[in-house]
Every structure is written in structure tokens, then in C-alpha cells.
Image 1: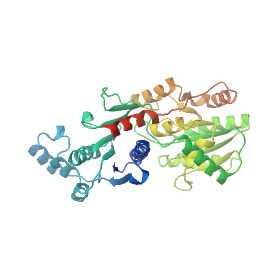
Image 2: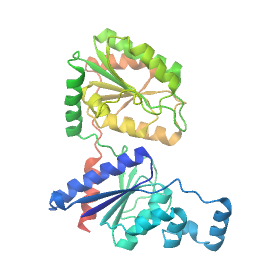
Image 3: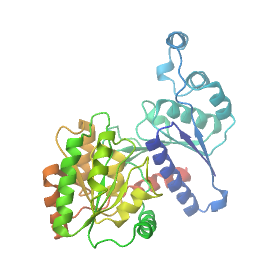
Image 4: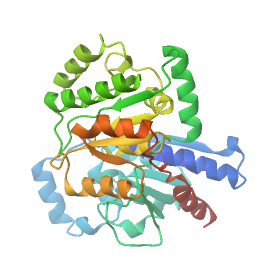
Length: 357
């Protein structure tokens, strides 16, 4: 069994494709394939390759069906570099996995057709949804119901119970014993419809500190590579001298292996910024109680639909910043609980059907 994972250079897409590849391997083993017979190849398509405006005009003039094309040789040669085309033409695979990116999705269909392979796409492709053997699409990306579509409530991630436990044990050995009640804060950063300000995070930190003081708790905090410099500086000045902050992860300076999974595994309650579908999904899949801090102008309509869907299913709580300390206290006293988000059974069911075809 040969699995080919096509990358487009976007870290979030790569992580989701890799998670699907791992679930596919697990399904192959459950279907009777010896683990040693399952081979995976990763190939990053050169998505930065650009054509000049004149070349684009000439291309569309000579190939008027290009926008409706599902990946002919002509389209692929135009979209990718000559080096990519030569190397892709030499690859073999039984199942091809890619994200929704325009070029990787086209390459996926093109290679699947050439090789007689099965194609899997993660998230909504911009065109040709019915041309894939399996499409794994978040519910908030509203698409038509098709036999090849598997809907997930969150984004695909690696937060299996086993990984969370292993990472938590590793992190606990590094930072040592902690107080009985532990609070985590996961911060993303600026995004298309979201701006993380210093003033906003100052209010969040005030609420989390208040909760820790009232409940004799300790906190762990992680920023991301998208977190603005002003917010990073605030975290350093506020938390490095704060005795109840046992761990501060700044990815560019200190980022132990498996830090996010370890923090999620050690924490009783997790507070997450609202802009990242993947970060919220990872937190909700960890088994901890999840609060997503919220204000009306934070995110756009489709993203808000994602957050409200998880809240309606009990996977997260959407809480205004000024109520964070109160909701942490409510959870501590047993008056709140969120349910585990687990999309893995639905995804594995779709992959098992794919293997049976």
C-alpha cells in the first residue's frame, strides 16, 4: 500500500493531511495489511511558482476550458514548475492525500487519474468536489451532500487520547509537580478577520490571574508564531515574574517537543483565542474543559458558525473576556462541563469504505 501526501507549504494543511495519513495507516493495518507493507511518500508541490500576466492571458486564450478542467497534462504543466512536473510524473501511489489548495487539488486528481489511484482531499476543494474518491470537509464549509463527503465538526488533528497522555507525561517530567488545579491559555494571533491586540490580551491575562489566585491554581501559556510582537512582549513582562505561571512557551525562543499536547493533557481547563479552527479543535479534542474567549467583532460569519456549532454540541464554551474568571470558578465547583470532540470515528469509517472499494 503506497500513500502519497501532497503538500502546499501551509503548516496547518500539512498537519491535517498527515493526521489523515496516520488514520489511513491504522485503517490499513485493521484491514489486514502488515505495517511494514504500508509506505508513505511526502511531496511538496512548488506552489510559489508564478506565471507572468502575459503568459496567463495567452494560456487562457489557448485553453478556454481551463477553468472547468479537472487536471489534464496541459493544466498541470502550466500550474507547476518544470521540475515538479518531471518529479511528479515519476511518483507512484495507491492513495493520494492533499489539502484543498487549488494546485495541490488539481495535481491530486491528475495523478490519481494517471496512476489509477484513489484520491482524498482535506477541506473544500475550489472545484471538482465529486471528482475525488473521498472529501473530508468541516461542517461550517457548507457543501452539498455527496456520497464521497465526510463531514467533521472541527479540523482534523493529532489529539488522540494516547498522544495527549504521552505528551503530558513528558512535559510533567520537564516542569515538575504542579498544584492540583491547572489552567492553560492558548493564544494564536492575527488572521484574516481577527486582530489580537495588547489591550485584549491584557484583559484576558487579568481574568486568568484572578482565577488562579482565587482557586490556588497554576497556569501554563503558549503563544504561536502568529502572535504579534507586542503581545509577546506583554506575555514576557506579565508572566515571567509571575510565580503561578509554570510554563510560558514562545515558539521562537522556547518550544519543547509536544508542548501543546502536553499542556492540554496536564490542564483541567483550557482557555483559547477564537480565531484558529485548528487550535480550538485540538483543545476540544483533548478531554479538557474548553473556554473560547469571545466578542462579537472577533471573527467572520463562517468562523462564528464553526464556534457556535461546537458550543451547541457541548464541545466548547464561548465566554466574553470579562466572564472568564467566573466561568473557571464555575467549572472548578462542578457547574460546567464540555464534551470531547472526536471526529476520528467518522473519518476512519470513510477511509475504511475507501479501502473496500
